[in-house]
Image 1: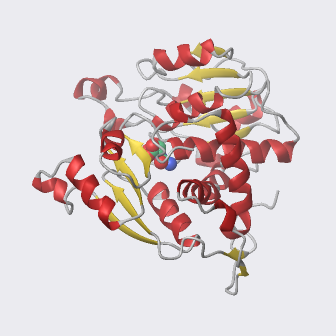
Image 2: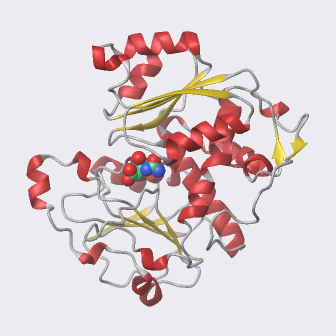
Length: 343
Ligand code: NCD
C-alpha cells in the first residue's frame, strides 16, 4: 500500500484487484442505501487548477459520503500560486490543514512534486497530459461491472481506444492499467498527430498484448467489446497544431450507425467525459443517448464507489466501513437519469 496515488506505474495487479473489491463494498453507500461515518472528523483539500466538474465533485462527494468534510479551491486566480507561491510551500501548508489532498494541475509532474513535500496522502486528479489514475481505476471498475452483466471476461477482450490519444491523460493511465491484465487486443485510432505516445505502446506490447494502430474508423474491426472514446484536447494544442487540426474529419466519430454496422449488441461505449457536444466538435455522438450500450453515465456514477475505495484505503479505515452503517432516510429515486435503464 502506498500513501499517495500519483501514477498507475506504482500499482500492482493485486492492489488493483483489492481496490475493485473495496469499491464493490462501497456500492450501498454510493447508491444511497446506507450511510457510513468512517471518516468523521477528517478533512480533504480538493485543489483544482484546471477545469473540472466530475472529478472535483465526485472526489468531494466520495469523501463526504465517508463522513469527512472538504475544503476546496478552484483555479489559480484565487490561490496563492497567483502570488508566486511554489508547489513545495503550498504542499507543506496544506499538509498542516487537511488529512488528504486531491490535486489537479496543468503541468505534467506537478502533482508528484507537490506530493514530495507532504506526508498526507496526495491523489493525482490529473496532471496536464500526464496521468489520471483514479479515472483509470473507475474505468476498469466499470469494465468489470459491465462484463459481469454481459457474461464476459477481461482475458482476450478487444478494446478500441479512439480520439486524442496523445494528450488524453485518461487513456495514458487506462492503457497502463489494462496492461496488468489480459492478454488483450487493443486497437488505437486517432487523427494523425494525436497518436498514443510510443513508449506506452511499447510498454503494453512488451507485456504480451496485441496492439494495432489504425488511421480511421472506416474499416472493419471484428468483435469489439469496449469502445473508449476521448475528447480532442484543443486546450493542449500548440498554435501550430491548432491550425493543422482546424477540422477533424467525420471519420473519427463514434455514433449509432457505427455501432449498428460494425459492433455487436454487447459492445459497450465509454468516455471519461466531458464530451464536447458543440456542432463540429466531432466527439461521441449524442444519437446514442438512451442506448443501453452507452455506458458513459454508469461509468461516471462509478466514480463515487471507486473514489470512496481509494480514500478508505489511503486513510486506512477499510476495516471499519460497515461498522455502525445506517439506512438512508431521505428520498432516493430508483434511477438517477431520466433515460437510465435498470440493467
Ligand atoms: C478528463 C480529464 O480531465 O482528463 N475528464 C475527466 O477527468 N473525467 C477528460 C477530458 O478533459 O477530456
